[in-house]
Amino acid sequence: MQVKEILRVKGNRLLSIEPSGRAADAVKTMADENLGSLLVLDHGRMIGILTFREVLGALAARGGALGDLHVKDIMSPNPVTATPDMEVNDLRRTMLETGARYLPVLQDDKLLGVISFRDVAKAVLEEQDFENKMLKGYIKNWPA
Image (cartoon, rainbow, N blue to C red; front, side, top):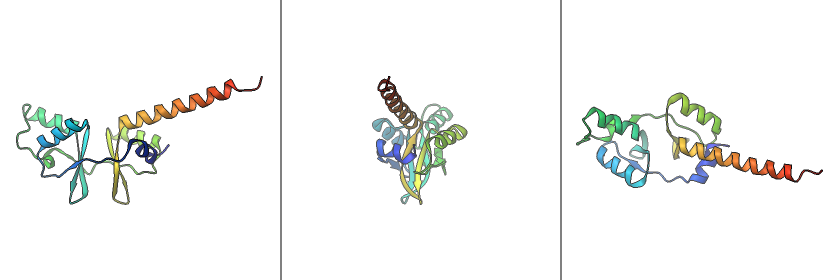
């Protein structure tokens, strides 16, 4: 299975924020949309990603308040990315080795979507369920 197959099922809805945006506004968007990450775009070009990890770190460092903090002050610049042709096992390995829970998917500098660790787990589980059903059907219909 490849990343593009996960994106096809998941969809490629992208929400983003500008680096000059307020961190508090980013948190509101993430909460309202039930997202764990927001892409940070500057003039349409991805320059970073903001995840709940960075938000929690900023809250911890500032006594629980974000105040007038800007996204550019807490985002992760130049995040690790995936390509649509990347195999899921390579994607999982990359996520585990880098600790990234969210990977933007790029093809020729065009942003196609974001894959989360949850998206990967769901896709792998569904693929295994399908294979199990096929194998059980094959065994059940095996000539005696």
